[in-house]
Image (cartoon, rainbow, N blue to C red; front, side, top):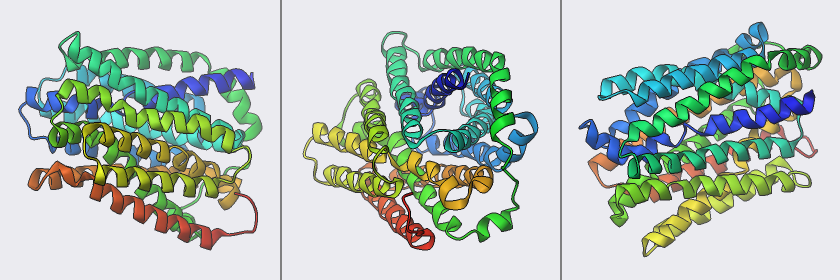
Amino acid sequence: MFNLLLALIYVCFISLGLPDSLLGSAWPVLCKDISVPVSYAGIISAIMFIGTIISSFFSGSISRKIGSGMLTSVSVAMTAVALFGFSISDNFWSLLFWAVPYGLGAGGVDAVLNNYVALHYKAQHMSWLHCFWGLGASISPYIMSFALLKLNSWSRGYLIVAIIQIVLSVIIFFSLPLWKKTESEKEKNEKSLTLKEIFSIKGAIACFLTFFAYCALEVSSSLWVSTYLVGKWEMSAETASGYASLFYIGITSGRAINGFLAMKLSDRFLIRLGTSVVLFGVGLLFFAGNATLALCGFALIGLGCAPIYPCIIHMTPDVFGRENSGSMIGIQMAFAYTGFLTMPPLFGFLAEATDVSLLPLYLLLLAGFMLFMHETLVLKTKKGKKT
């Protein structure tokens, strides 16, 4: 039963990734259809992430009351309804309305699944599960590109993904007995902490800020890659939408490889390795003389991002205690989505005021801050053991 549940969780992680790259892929066309400036993508993302931050804060306590399986099923259903709402929207205000349930649903399923996997599975599964998230995120730009080219409609792209989410929500609901049995055996040691108690844990703030910087970097790259290719290298919107998947292909392939590396190497080493690759990819964007090299730069940034997110989460029970894991990961998710909320929209306004070609410099600053905060975390929590 435990292996059957693990297989279902792998499918859930594909579901987590599917909607994440839809907005960035569709936006060059979508913004023209609804007659709004390009920077307004950041506003929609902000609404999504406000909802996600709220649900992440409360995910630990809700999960303890209704169970991880039920929370996951309800959260996936909320994202499905929201995506359907996107597919029938014909103005900016409708998109803002449907961004609310999308954010609430995404935050709930993200926090509860990450904590569950960190507690019950080995490091390689954390990486491979997030690889499956990357698979979902890599597929959705192709779904959107297909909808734009063959169906002549970005709304059909959202509708296809909404149907997939509805089916998954039903499957999770009927699997609830598996979740309940596992939780009754495994979740006994978790406890709820106040915010004051969480922030007083040694190294907690550095960990949260590392997560903030990483997620700001990842989403800024994925959200603006299509717009950067159109604005900097004069690609067509349809072509750029398809090429945006290279970033997620980098993450997906990197996490597949990282699963094997995690069997031998520590989480901290893999985070440092990933950050180095990110910096190399950003450097390639600075010196790219053509669109092909720029695409390689984004693929390398995705490859470097691969180990960072799963390794930070996986080391949480070991570094901060299994009994604190649920509360810590909930706040980690909140900081992650705060990064999503603030930094990609900020670049949108900068690009509107100046030029989209500033994206490499923006990503460099985020990567540098992430590296600094991770090293601060290492110094504050060093215990002389492999984490």
